[in-house]
Image (tube, rainbow, N blue to C red):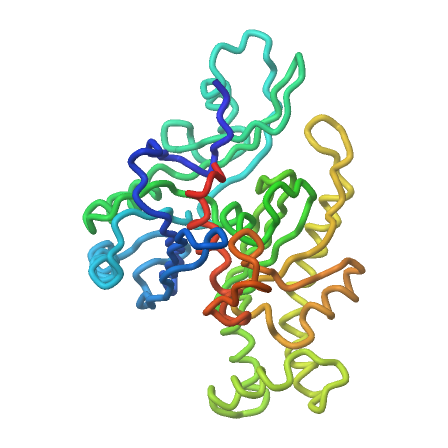
Amino acid sequence: MLRNSYNRFFPVPDFLVPSSFGLDVSDESIKFARIVGAKNGIKIGQYGERKIPAGVIESGKIKDQKQLEQILLSLKKEEGIKSVRVSLPEEQVYLFRLLLGKAGLQNVREGIELALEEHVPISAPDAIFDYELLSETEENLELQIAAIPKSVIESYLSVFKNSMIQVQSCELEAQATSRAVVKRGDMETYMIVDFGQTRTGIFIISRGVAVFTSTLDDVGGVMLMKVIQKSFNISYEEAEKMKKDYGLERNGPNKEIFSVLLNIVSILRDEMVKHFIYWHTHKDEEGKDRPPIKKVILCGGESNLKGLAEYFSVSMKIPVELANVWTNINDTAKDIPEIGFTKSLTFATTFGLALGDFDYD
């Protein structure tokens, strides 16, 4: 039987799922959130963040297992975490589409294994993969494949096992993020840009599935702060205030900072444009035109930089908007969230993970 579940490498039967807890693990921090039932549907229960010391996780690979286990044990004790949906490090995941012929096909997974090494730089025995059925004809299956080195996922599962936290699922960051910021049932195509502190993720979501991911290391808030500090010879605190007050406003009161920030932001813009153009100028695996990207959705802690959405929109000639991470959680007109809008942008992936228990798989 074909399964629409590539965002669940290790699924657990529904009757064993005790809670809806999302845990977004990155090189710098662990963000967590629990979604609970409410009078008007569902809402965020507890949420928060724990910093991870430098060197514990690097580019998504666990380097200090014992220290990460101590952080998780502390989090388990303080927040009462028993089971979680965990994000997979985007840098370590390979995504590709595969057109698999039905002729002579006995087993879909075996068919994928035979084609795996043509698409990813890891051998089938050393990879863990899952797939999503995108479409089917009499002759072919169109599949979206996600593959990750077995050693990476086993290291994460080992850490959680030693921390006595049950892993309900391991999911792509892009898939979890889209679950939070794209309205359930929306089959349009979007580019999602997660502009964070130390890196930026660029995802393309089409028909509810993450079909492309890219990570820009070192392009994020930290780089912006360093450039401001160096350019104006000021302290970190002063640079932070300047970034917040002026941002990327072309006609703002401080035109010099616009030029300074533009040097960094234009790197991200150029990368977005590159993927945008490629998407629209290359056919899919069946030789058909790809559906057009309808808009760009910004999330992540640095996405609320003043003037950022407007700059991208004007330069790319496409609608660009800040994400609404509550779109599938609650009606903000009736129930005002405890988390402010700016802060909520940093929890898009975490909320998306937690939403996984609410019939999204």
